Length: 422
Image (cartoon, rainbow, N blue to C red):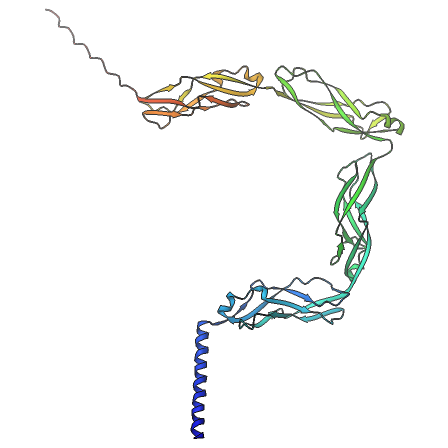
């Protein structure tokens, strides 16, 4: 009896094993296992447990490629956030180390996913003592102010910054510089400037952090003793022709720097006039190079007391109207056209001197009949205004055109000859 029971148990276990194998094959066929990189772009490598008082010589910017093996349905539910790729630097001593890259995936077991390979499997890190220094900001003015001006003071806010990083790099920082450009300024300037860590050879030091990284730089620029900046005022004489006006006046340069004995230059007026510039009767822009009248005892810096004066002359604008008979274009042969109304009113704006001499023949009003057959049409005429003129309105803005077939001329009968009497 026991023998029979054992035979039956063996058969049952064999049947159960076969059933499990059939189930596994069926499941696998419907949900095949695949191995591939996930995610395709890789995962950033994190650095964990850096010992207190130490820092990496340079940041790790590598990404690790993770090869996972999982059923095909798993790829739809797994996401990149499920993977944490890291190196653990706990208890690591200063120096260069070859450390393993590790992966943590909390959802992988329940998703029946396994890690096949990590690439790279190991990376090299350099651990150094963290060093911090407090350095004063040096304002480095890269250019010079204009002649007659000088840089009086420079300062930064804050005056000191903190430099941190690996000891080997921080120790190379000889100074922290704020490069500054005056760009021809003649007064006080305040600008935010990004500071740079510089070594003893004038090169920028990498792998260090500066806090704050930007400071407000103040540069005070003042006039040298005996120098004075003065404005130039053009001396315009006369008036443009009737119907014209001075639309703009410009001077280049608009200021000059004069110098002399301090007692003399300080008494020089703040505005100097030019020699007279005559624009009487002008209808176009006047361009003249003239001398500036400089008082005794002072000299123009650079030795050239001349400036270029530009007086722009523009025509006064006005408005007017003309009554014009439209001109027909594109009328097919064999057709006649009649336009109603016979004339239209064109309202224009433009230069007043030209407007006063404008004639109807100067402003064509065109009605295009190209490709049109017999019938009645409402058409908008086109106005060809001369250059410098603008069409304000057209009254009326449409005309009625009637196209008809031209009548065919009937030939006159030839008279019969009268018989002569014999």
